[in-house]
Length: 169
Image (cartoon, rainbow, N blue to C red; front, side):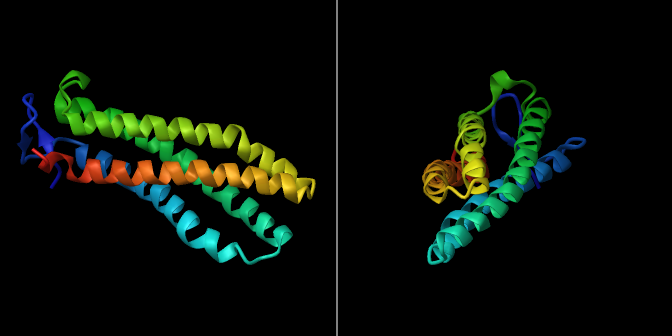
């Protein structure tokens, strides 16, 4: 069951058209992005810390290269499904409840942070690894790690707000 709302913001119990599919895509996009950040930050980073710089940084190059493809897909799915659900669930963007506005705002901030990482430190990191400039690669990876850490916190908050929002009141 999904939480659909009437124009006053009260939760309804029915479903409409493609809403379950949109919501499923939305949740899957969030799981891929936030779950990937959680894994990379909390498991892979500490696990790879003992590797020699050349091995560790080459590993991060391969892992992040694949992960960023999935983040691009997740961002597209999240934005498309999120904006597609608004008129179905609420009738218009002007009547969405506060928790949806918070979720949307955090999602946009996360997307901007991701774009920054992809455009700047990720490109610098790739060049540095390609040139075997391990010191520069480590600096860029540090920048990526810090921004991903912030995005991970924002993502966890967004998931909590999105999942619990309809029930907060």
